[in-house]
Image (cartoon, rainbow, N blue to C red; front, side, top):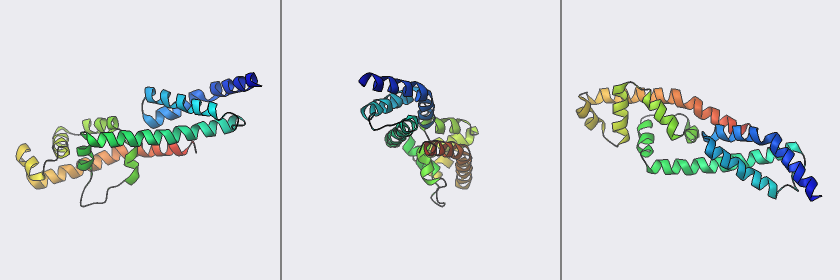
Length: 182
């Protein structure tokens, strides 16, 4: 019986591993973490193998393990990023006069996504964004770049809009990819 269980489990791993890896990579954004996550899910599936009857149950259960653990990892990474430079970046993204668009979707944005989006900004806007991310006031930024406070505010407004436009589709896609495995 044990040999039959092992053989059936091996068949399920062969059948679903690449799809699980693709799913985990889509959520986490990198292969190394995705491979670790899939291995964790397979280890957990092995422990629960007596309760996982059939291919669909195996796929659904491992998918849930990946989703749950990925969300936990992303939350942990997000918390760590807040402690670093990203804390300033998130602050620079929020507009005190408006309610932040996207809400919980921002939890699906990774540091590399934000850095790439910021690098795509025009040089002056990128500079004011970095200065604001460092906690500088509009007045201080204006004095450094030789522009009025109003111009700095307008540039930061444009930056927020451009970054939302670039990042919200990425966040939405990641959110939906997690939901696809439920």
